[in-house]
Length: 149
Image (cartoon, rainbow, N blue to C red; front, side, top):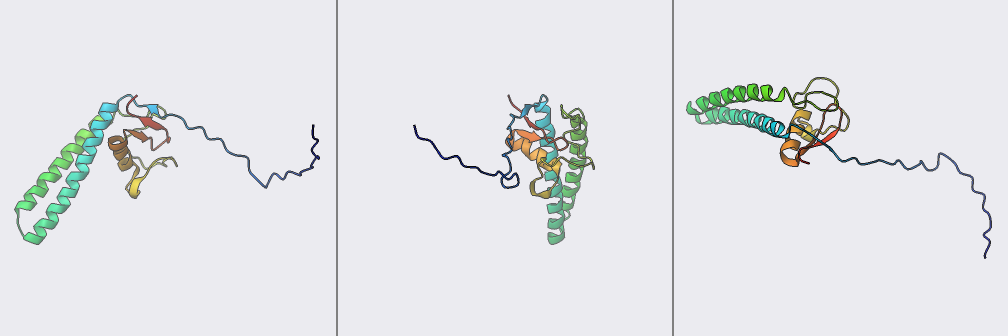
């Protein structure tokens, strides 16, 4: 059996920090998944109608055709109708953990882990996450939720 020379090593606490163990938790299940997807589709349709209204205004200014003005007014009416329906549908959608509304953005501080795609707002990020990832993070508490089991 070999004997190793003892080495006295002075440990300096400032040299290397202790590794931080981060436990990755599986996202929680969101119960009202169908209503959340439907309300998210309504929000996306409302934003698309606003983009269509802007396109109709530009097209009317360029071509001097009043028909595009009527289309634009119809899109504004559609936008208002969809926003009212989406607002009524999403009133019952709240985060099970912090009890804040999932599809209503308030002016309070958002959680640092909340997603904000393209700096268009946390609500837009929640809608895109729900429709394309089938998961989202609450903008107020930062908890991850999945829509299917």
